[in-house]
Image 1 (spheres, chains in turn cyan, yellow):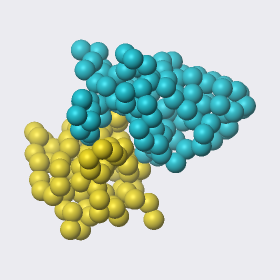
Image 2 (cartoon, chains in turn yellow, red):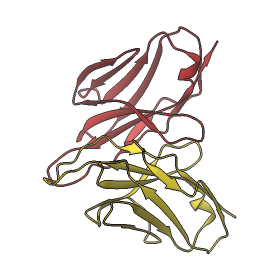
Image 3 (cartoon, chains in turn blue, green):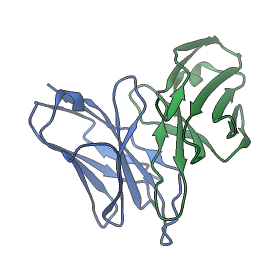
Length: 117
Length: 114
């Protein structure tokens, strides 16, 4: 059973550029959450997608946007990159189910390490 | 004050020691409590989760939650060098229709010396 996969593994961008990160959830999962983990810090919640809609959002600016596709995979887009956006971006998947009951077992992918220069 | 505070590290112990990792929190709405283990350059891996107060045991690991004190702990018995990693506590609220985001502590790096 493939777990959560993310691509690319590493990425180097310049300030002002735009970046797209991709995530495929664990088999059977329908909900994708994105987290930003700065060096030496715990992950910070960015947003969560279910049924192709943004369901929750953390304290991140509108430069951070996302999308979920019918196959439950997801993208995270960051515009106008800043040096402070350098971090490990983690995707986590979980199962919410048709009754929209929220399960809290979130399984994380290996992350995409973004460096902004 | 951050919603979740985790004891600062790093922590270094000899093999076979009992390790105690702790977190405190300020939001009384948290009901689910998790411990994740993160190896270097990897994503966090769920170790254990508990709902509300009480103890939960899984092999060498025991998770404790005291909601009255807003305090959670993870105990590792007979620690092994393979336990060397960063340990993150995480919490979430649960109510119908919303809010399963995880709020994490800063993490503590554990090193188990052979």
